[in-house]
Length: 208
Image (cartoon, rainbow, N blue to C red):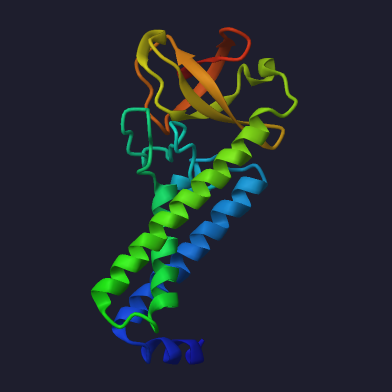
């Protein structure tokens, strides 16, 4: 540990910042991944409790994230989530570390690191989108969802005026499903319970 601290203290202050971001976000990202694949988290749940995988659907299924930590942008595209912030900072940290020796100007290095961060978000969003599609079409009965608790993934409009999405874990697999509510609007990250099926594939949910 002492050798590690000595190495860190000898680094340039700018490089120290990038290494700190890279190490911290790598640990958080690893926790998110582990919790996701053991079925303890959801795609956005990791935003607050580090469960789930980063990102969602860039075409309108993007959320994130997160028991009160999700910034609901209105339902169409949800980019500002804790999970996506972690992915972004992961790219910024490692981008800064990797390009530090080749880019001497601090501001240019900062811009490149930011660009890498955006790229990380886009890549993880696309990967997660494909993962959710596979899980969504897995063999399971929608009726099994009734009575289970889950999290709102994409905002659900009030009084069945529109469809949102929830993420629910069935036998260790996370599924992203369409959902309606009879009550007031439910923001992303809200804890809800499935009360019924509307058309065989759309869940009716209520706030817990």
